Length: 195
Image (cartoon, rainbow, N blue to C red; front, side, top):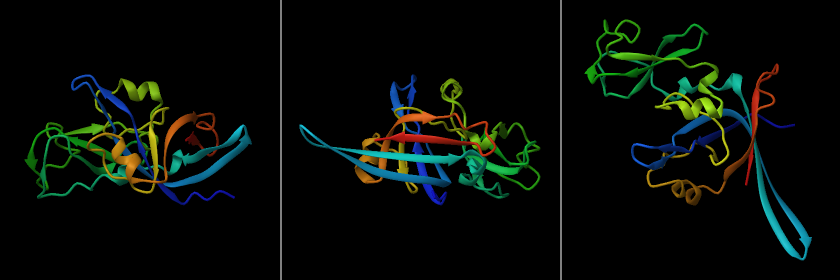
């Protein structure tokens, strides 16, 4: 039986037309299954092929867990993301800071739209690939697509390129298949495979 007890990090590949560079925003997800295997074929020589499969139960993904709880008396910079209260789905509500400021008890994210913009996130921030690509700013969202990278455990942020990650982690693979057939089932989940 496969256990859903692993933490993974997905690095979503995004092209930024403003800088003309590929960026790699990451999302850390708990409660996944991870299986790795090596296939060896004997024929005109010996060939080896590593393969990985990850299952992500979408109902257990909470992107809000990766962001800090809003507090009074804290200096916030433009672009910071905090959680405060709950949204209409009963999940933690995320807000993006719109202006630099030091928070006050009477300036909560829910009551000061000039300081904080609410992020509309459903199902843990997962978006299908086409919707994810349309976002100007992927903060608070993630997807799974061919060309992304997945690491077993909590990975570091990419600084100089994805080779930072592929050289640092041995349990790492490039996504070659994303199976979304089970998204609308009783136990919604993604299956990601790669080499």
